[in-house]
Structures are given as structure tokens and as C-alpha cells.
Length: 185
Image (cartoon, rainbow, N blue to C red; front, side, top):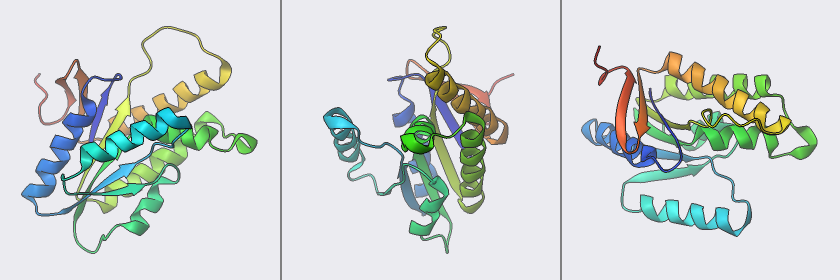
């Protein structure tokens, strides 16, 4: 499992796509793109259309799975080794916490569920690249719901970092290896 983390617009998506395509092509595997974004409003719909356009011709089979991410396995042909890119954990956490306002879930519950499901996916996949967000450094105190979201995302990121073979932070388009293959001591 390779975890790619970074701030908004830092190049983490392009980097992650390159890494998973390289692995899938080298090992001649089917490549799945696990999209987690839910479209809220016209801006969200435009972003999803733009992402779909960017993936065209890259050989990725898209599975839109905004919640219950382990259910993506039901749509994959996992009889032989396959690879997947998940874009992104920040959306997944928000969807699990807030998609149903009548049944808002607690941060710990959401973090535990998502981490369990992502580790389940990792066990079934040959190569797995996960994109996640760094939203922890602005020093601003937000409303209670947003702070719970940040806490849940932090818990998931910490669990993924621990389980990952490789952890890469993208800083202004430059990969900084924190754990794994590219890390220098």
C-alpha cells in the first residue's frame, strides 16, 4: 500500500495515478479507480466531470463508491491480481460522517470503519495507492462538526501511515518520502 498525502492542488492525484499505472502496467493487471466524491451542487458535478475527462484513455475502470468503500470489491474482478487507486480519503470521511444528517456518526466510529475497510481492500489487491489530504496545519479552530471531521481524518491517516509500505507527501509537486522505498536516512 502506498499512501500519498498533501494539501489541495499540490499534485498528489497526478503522482498517485503515475505510481499505480506504472505498477499495473508492469504486472499486466486490471486497474480500478475508486472515486469517493459525492456531487453536491453544480460545482461538485463539474469537478466530477473534469476528473472523469482526465482519466479517459488511462485504462482505469472507475467505481464510484462514496461510502462503504469495501463494497467496491463486489464490482472488481478479483479472481486474478488487480490494482486500485482510491481518490480520496478526505471525501470518504466526510461522506461517512455527514451524508445522512439524520444519522451523523461519531469521529471514532467513522475512522475505525474506514480504516478497517481500507485494510480489507489492501489485503485483496496486488497494488493499492491511496490519496489523502493534509488539512491539519492552518491552526484555525472550526465548528464542532468540522473539528470532528478533522479528527476522524487524522485517525484514518495515522492508521494508513502505520500500515503503508510507502508514505509520500507531495509538497508543491515534489514527492517527499516519509516511509518506504524512496526515503533517505
